Length: 284
Image (tube, rainbow, N blue to C red; front, side):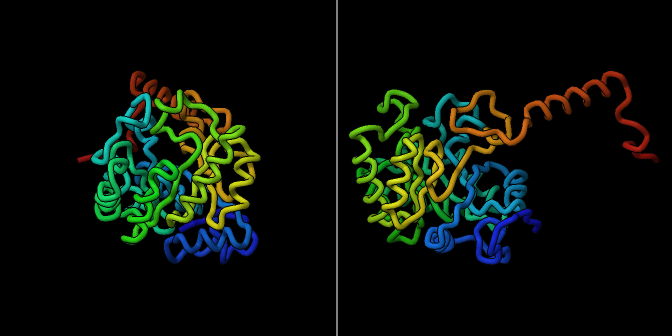
């Protein structure tokens, strides 16, 4: 495995550190204790997951955002367990170091803790994930408690929770004004219930900083400013494949243009008869 990292004390660090085993939730806790920031990306297939693993990304999320970037849905709501479990298995099989977190999709955990346990168990057994993620605060605390007691690490998700987009009134910043106190309360409740990390999405930077300071578990920001312990992006957004991205996204490549140009060059050569050439052909 090749890791291209430039990190102080790389032997212990999450990004570019030890490569002979999987990253664990204890490693994330240790990073929080020493003030180390770390990156997280989504992944949905074997090839890109392997690339991110080689790059030293310590945590990969098989997000329900697959609904949008893999299956073409308008929201994350329609995606199912049967659609996400095989993607999770592909990511897990093709990586050696990254902690693989699977997103529990809408409708797979809200009705009861027992439903959450059954769904999470599928991700752990069939998908070979090492942890799961779910959205919500105090309302899902019983689910978090049961999963953790059953030996399933849980990443919580607060702020803009896309599975609740209809009740939130759209994709809007959460935790402003008086709502900040409720967000902090939910974050502490998730920590109390046993979550090993808390995602904060579309939250004012100062609120995210306050939550990060008051929690002993890591916070993962996405549109939550620079003070969280980690950052996560959908990889297609990060790499310039998505046609439209949110304000909080920074693109680090333009793969849309690269792939379009490659496809056009291939098509031109096929039409012109210049591909395949002799070196691409077999002889009898």
